[in-house]
Length: 394
Image (cartoon, rainbow, N blue to C red; front, side, top):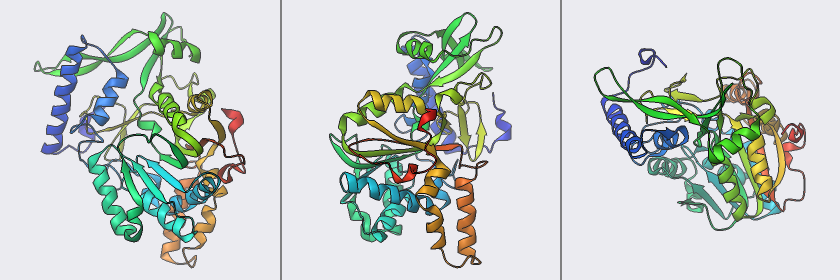
């Protein structure tokens, strides 16, 4: 477990929020007979109303939060992405939906760039379940693109029918995952149980049970390494597969652009990756203890892009492209966007160039992050995958 002394201490209000979530977890564990899947724990830790990480009101994005996403680094990310959105909307419908819009910076950047290109969507939908984040998105749009804010509306659930472009940046990695444990004596699911603390208080702990049902079926299909000694631990994102299938039922024409960190299956379940990819983020510190201050940490897992592509294909969508974030941005003209920032010796250009370096360098976000496109009725290769498409690796 992580030594909390090495992390910045939470304030009193944050600790009170964490205590409320801990009580909710304890009650649910008791009602479930003393064991819950890690997927359920992660769901509550991130999304429990009023006390989960994404619903509790704490600042999450940017320098004052827990992590920085690509739109927080530079508007060039959204400007390059807009080139792909234009192509998708032209081949389907002038509608755009963003899933999990964070602070609203990507929405503002996309709208301003689409306006510059003469390709504004008739409507820009934001699917966001956090009331606190909705308020931040509204404020960001009012500040950055006030004349375009009227085009934006917020969605409480997936729409009944969709045509156009759907953008999801760092959404799949925060979907609840089941934990698989492969040992010489079989396949297990690692979940959460209750253990007494030093003062008699409740605290969560790990507990394994034999894998069963859909978890066992999916786990066996992966053919995980089975060490003779020790164990092999990894993640299974059944929620991501179901999410893609739900979109497939609704997408009549257009494409989904999914940006996240992850691997194709052949790289995800390597024997050398025996402890999985689960990570927590707290004030720009990465750690491995999801039980530390529940509700105050982001909990993430890398994406198995093969599983997401298979789920899309099985649900009737076309798998349109898969490549690194760097290759996608280069294909979409991020360097041309950079050149618009003025003289190369200027401070604005230098700052922007450094941000592009972070977005595209292999040792930064360029190789770790991938872009997957799935859709229906597109009928042509997409701009973002014109060079360097890696579909053959899925």
